[in-house]
Image (cartoon, rainbow, N blue to C red):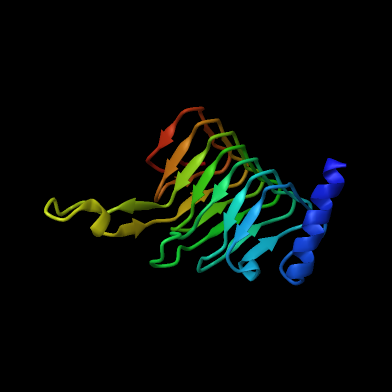
Length: 186
């Protein structure tokens, strides 16, 4: 019954956006898409678990390729809810999965390759606040957006944070609890 209801929700989204959503897709209850549905691209057999929020307001949209899984409670947020410049967006390759309660701050573009497995409580932030002028409040100095790239066949443990500008090479393993501030070779 649960799978059937997820399939029906996926079918409803497919009806609302025929050309950029493949079928079948599975969407659990409590999921919200905020923004234009035409900025959301879903491949076949995508599974979006409960209470996921996907904000689509972005320059390049949100693409979840075939057989992608988004864990329960995950937030995908490319742009501020409060206005300002549009963020860039997110691409997740075939067979990749992100664990429960993760946060993808894709105001700078986040690229996740094929067959990437990511544990729960993952955070990726593709921007940094500017703070060079101590006379001006940090929140008024703006941000610098820098993309994050995670290559194919990467395993990222639970509670990992990846910061703006980092590139993770193919076949890498990131230990649980790591804060990744520098790029890693394949």
